[in-house]
Length: 266
Ligand SMILES: *C/C=C(C)/C=C/C=C(C)/C=C/C1=C(C)CCCC1(C)C
Image (cartoon, rainbow, N blue to C red; front, side, top):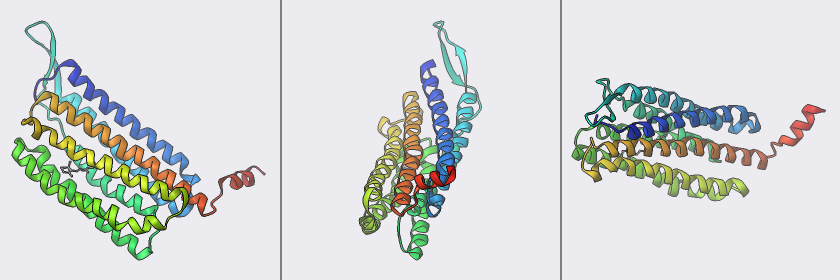
């Protein structure tokens, strides 16, 4: 780990703290709103809630690990810098988190769509497997000490990534065309959100390759912040959009909240 300035250390520290808060808040929102959704779409909300719970836990651990990996030390000019404490910054938390949450994210999308029951299981399986492969193949590159290995594993990991994008845009196209009303619009949009947010991860991953160093302080800071931003959008933003789709479909299929409220109060 390189030396960091007070602000370089602090901006990552605060980004982890913010991301943890966003995951927890989304978790509470999803749990409290689950009963607004028709029973057939509740599994999707449960999966969204699991994603942010798993990510929240891992962010808490990443936050602690970052804090433990550096100590404040005074330097010759009278200022202070954060230097490596000797304990390891554990980046593996992030990849274990992705390994669990990325398959769930594709599964929740399939769960709010209307597909033939036999098709749903097979498609979820293929997409979840590709998502897990993408994460597993990216990991050796993320922890590699040289940019050549990083580039190689990144390239291999992009193959399942392209397959996922292909399935979402080509494979799921006809099913989305068959949806109606608000749900159709939201489903077309969530695919774009997924592409935009998932596409952001490989760009962040590329930064050390572009800079030509895996130990440059600014690049390490940028990678951590980039992944935080991507995770908030791809887990919290996406989870809330899954909720909006499930809500729209519940309404379109006659699951009427207002009459339930009247029945309950009368
Ligand atoms: C909640 C976490 C999510 C949605 C993580 C998504 C991660 C990716 C889409 C990562 C993709 C990668 C590549 C396509 C190539 C380089 C290595 C990765 C793993 C960063």
